[in-house]
Image (cartoon, rainbow, N blue to C red):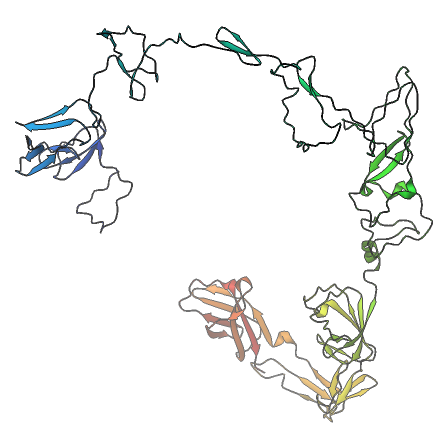
Amino acid sequence: MAINFLSDIDLKGNKLISAAINPQASAPGSATEGELYYNTNDDKLYSFDGSTWNEVGSTNTNTTYNLTAASNKITLTGSDSTTDDVSLAVDSGTNATLLSASNTVTFTLGAATNSKIGGAMLYQAASSASITPASQNVPTSNGDKLYQVFMDKDNKLFTHIPWTDDNTEYTAGTGLTLTGTSFSLDTATSSVIGGVELFSDTVQSVGANTVTATASRTYGLQLNAAGQAVVNVPWTDSSATTVGIKTDGGSSVSIADGTLEFLSTSAGGIDMVQGGSASAVTLTAKMDIENLTALSGDVAGDDIIVIHELDQDKLLRSTPGAMPLSIFGSPDANIAMNSNKITGLSDGTNNNDAVNLNQLNNAVVGLLDFKGGLNAETGENAGGDSITVPDFDCKKGDMYVVTTGGTLLGNKLEVGDSVYFVNDVAQNAGTSASDLAFANNQLDVATAAANLGAATIGISAYDSSDFSVTSGFVELKDRSITAATYGDNTSTGRQSVEIAMSATGVATSISESAITWVGTGTKSGGDLQFTHSLNTADYHAQLYYIKGGANYPVMAELNTASANRIDAKFGIDSQAVAADYELRVSVIL
């Protein structure tokens, strides 16, 4: 739905982005001067000048122009009497001319010359090919030959002159044969120069040897049955260590101090076939093991080991990593690991099996591992490292013996006491008292002294003026109290209290429930009423807010309604819930 604006909108120089100018199929019936709309039929923008809709960017239909021509100019005169001159000119490199008079401008193209571009009339229309003229009879005049001019595809003129060569003589030279006007190449012979066919089109990548004057090193060129040029090079290698051998008639070949290398063109190896017989050919190879080059370093994982595989009766290769130790026999001597690990070892099950580290750790976890002495005052071990914030991992079962007494994590320790880790504590994690267990070897029993500073704190310490300690037995001293009954159990308005004192102690008949009361009340209007059974008006009382586990005192006016009821007045808090509040009362004795 459109929003109506009853006043102008000032964008303060900002842009109006992604706006559509009032698209309509026809001009609006009423408009304000300057109003715009976009015609969706002819896709043009129109503005209203107060009386007429005009296309934006088109010529104003209310302005007319008069055209006059003089002095090679076109003068445009508008209805507002303004004039604009448009100058006309021709390229000075052409034979074109310009004439303007009586409101008419005339351009004239002159004929082409050897210095200026001009016009010409062609004999026939331009050709689509570079040079494809039609055959024409040659017009003549007084014996002269005249030829028409054509335009090629590059807009260039050319003339076609028909011509037949009937004066040329053809002669075949050496190695050529002439048939009519066609030449053919003769085949080369030992006496005639001619052409030859190559044996192969493959380009030889090996460079040619240099020219030599050595005797018997120059060989003639011949043709084979296919007319291809070949060279027969007789050759015997008397120095090479690699030879090719072929024997006939079952004869044997011996090679002294040389190397017999079987050359194979396939990756599969050498195939040996015995001619004239279906029986197999056996190739026996002997290797001088003792003279092989010794391995200078350790066997690497990508080295190759050759083994004789009995099932296939073949020499096969393998890498050390692909050969499990189980294929070898049991060792008959110690195996040196050269400071290396045995990894991936399963848990041992039999008495003679090896165990791995994880199996060993599981077996000994929690056993005591004596770590040395401990200063209980500083928490440092014999090496000066703290066990309370350790810079090393502490394990369950680690044990220390106190060499310097002190208080460690709130526990008094003396020389000879023991400290045990009952939990693992990671490096820098911080040790708590719950991570440790203590064995007190010589901890003092209960002691008595004149004051705390003079007492040696053991299991407990007592004031020597009131208590005596004998071999750890604590006894209250006789303070010469006269045996009697104190208090008044008949006072009106107070809880009856009766205290009996003797030389050995104090006794009273009063109970906690007789002097304190804690409970919730009931709602009555804006007040809370708390009914107790203390039967007194002398008390201390405090109201607490206890909802949701809260426990904080509340300011309220407390009034004594009776000896067994107290009212709490909240005033404005008429929404107070009785169960959210608790009154705590103590009797004043």
